[in-house]
Image 1: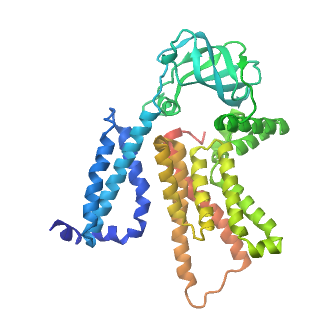
Image 2 (image 1 turned 135 degrees about the horizontal axis):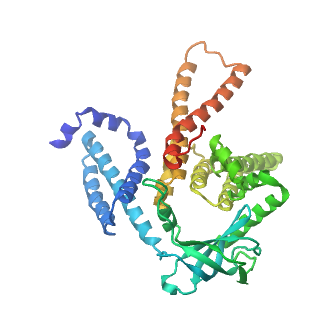
Length: 447
């Protein structure tokens, strides 16, 4: 028989020995299916991915019944193939779900009107995103789902939810500047941005302006804009722009010279709302609330204050992630922190390496196109590299600690370990993200 003979090969033994880590390969195979889909030069039939999943599932069910080593290895292969087809299917359906009209040629000057759903602040200008814009001279059914306009010069104060009318010139999303470069058209497609342009003259607010949370997305956009404006008003200069970026993720106000300096020094990643920011928010809430509740003896002795603090930390981290725009690094950080705190609620211990795997899988299911972006690749590359490195270091440390006569480290040595850990973390993260930074940004640091 094929299966018993297959079990004699060493690769199968290695595969079975790693049974506890099979779950870590699920997002890898899911991402492989997404990569295959986006690597095609044609659009496959929508049923193709589902047909592949439907064909693999019965085979996996049949193989699972006999058991045995060979059956276990073959079952793992079928499950991985099924995850690959599932990733292919997710990318197909996501692409079909966001399909929207795209401007095919330059238009304007013309009159554009629509509801503002996002406002971004830049030095000397603002950029607004209009939902379902009405473009003079263009049939409504051929107009883009969203249009992004840069308002130049002196303009009225605009907030999400208002209706805006302005004279503007519109162009379709531009193609990549070079082979293998950033695909701005694909980036715009998955955000349903079918037109870009700039204003001519002063915009006019023709309606709206209600400040209630009439729509969740608009309410969050108003909060983000209000927080950014208050920070910029309270802190002058580049410091205020950096502070606003750390709070709301709005980096448009940072001067280009300062942004270039941060990129060259390798500090630009601090502006992305990710693990550091979400972790600090959750830690402050968790430790602070638990400490306050522990001051009351009846409360601390008769109620699960640790779980209450964990629930509040989850809610606070989620609110912060929404206000910060919920980018891919923010989603990854919130999912990992949320799962750790959820483990506190159910009296379980969180496993970091599995948290990364499940966080990646959730993001890829919801937004398969994020796999192709630098944000997803660099964020997960840094986290996975650090977890793998410290997992190896922890195993070696446990082996040394188990030796007889091992003395606990002194305070000076502990301080040295801490400084070495900080330096090692920087080296690991920089080495893991450097290939992706070179590929995506092609920046020359030394001049």
